[in-house]
Length: 214
Image (cartoon, rainbow, N blue to C red):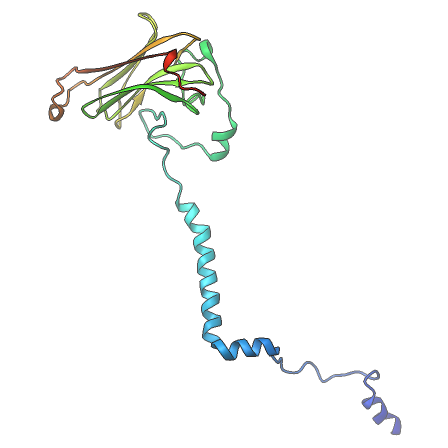
């Protein structure tokens, strides 16, 4: 029919059933492929994928144990999460902390060492919490059975023995505006390699004047 040809030639009339033709790369894409080749494109994709995997995996593997300067107990513990470590305040102060664990009460966060003494492999420290206003004794480089003691008076003392590992710390004692504390580490069997006899003691004292400026 005469009208049929006119409909086919009219770009605005009829229905086009030809479907999409083969895709032709834009000039800039053809130019890039011509210069670099498909191998370069594939290599770029592989590098990007490997980088993504490493970015996700490395932080997951990087979690380690808590710094040894923290007040770890006799057995293995669970390192607090970053959120817990920065948001949970101490649960006690002064007299309310008497006899409590500095780690369990979060008093170990922000704690400082007022004094330390070394003999053989044993190091004895007096630890102080500005937030809780408490002191405790800490012993590192020790052996099973060695003990650490903290005292703020002849009758006010806390003492603990090493059960496993090489580190131990005592419970806390309150430290007022003025105080005097003495920590004593005792080697049960001594350290022959360091000429320390059985029962050898390491003593160190500290008071309010040893508190560093905050």
